[in-house]
Amino acid sequence: TTTTTPHVLADSLQEILGIRGTLRDLYETLVTPAGEFYELAAVVTHPGSQRQIVHPDLPFQNSAAPLYVVFLALQDVTQDMGPTSFLLKTHTAAQNLQFTSGDKDAQLAASDCRLSCLKQGDAVVFDARILHCGNANASNQPRALFNFSFRNPKIQGPLGYEGSIRPGYTKAMSLADVADALETYNNGQDDDPFLKYGSGLV
Image (cartoon, rainbow, N blue to C red; front, side):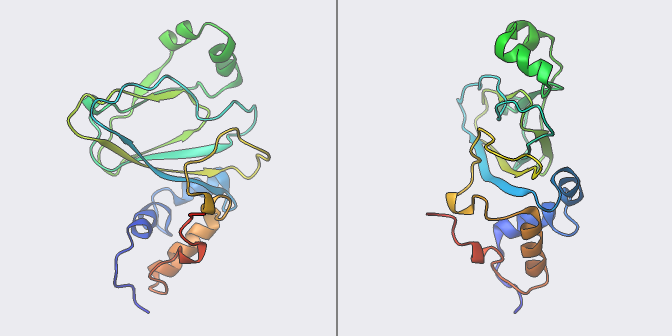
């Protein structure tokens, strides 16, 4: 069959994780094709939303990075919209120890903080252990980010963090599975390449 009806999710993921996707090679290097599709969501911050506290997404594990996360801008993200702040090089054991049991104020004051103002379609890829926070949205429009992640298959056991994904999709797909589904879609062989995984609702 020939694909005639646009599939918003497949079209979006095709640009990112398809055979010529902008992040395909990077993710295959970071987590291998066996990496678990761990998160699939949108992060939306409405006007008037307050700043988050600085936090990592994961309890610290002194290992290879357990989870690599993407925030992809669905519109231009300007400073008044409260873009995410990232504190560079805070994913280490020493930085985590200071954050959890040391002088946190001094650590934050001395950090190399970067504000992720983005153009539509720009993406940030980060180790989920890094300290970060979404800032207050002082604009008159929502800030929307496409959010997904893949888990490093070398890291076994609980991560201490449940990914934002429909429960029926938990542990259902790997990066290779997503790539295969997108290839059948790209070849016009399947209008809904993720249908075999169901709605994800349980």
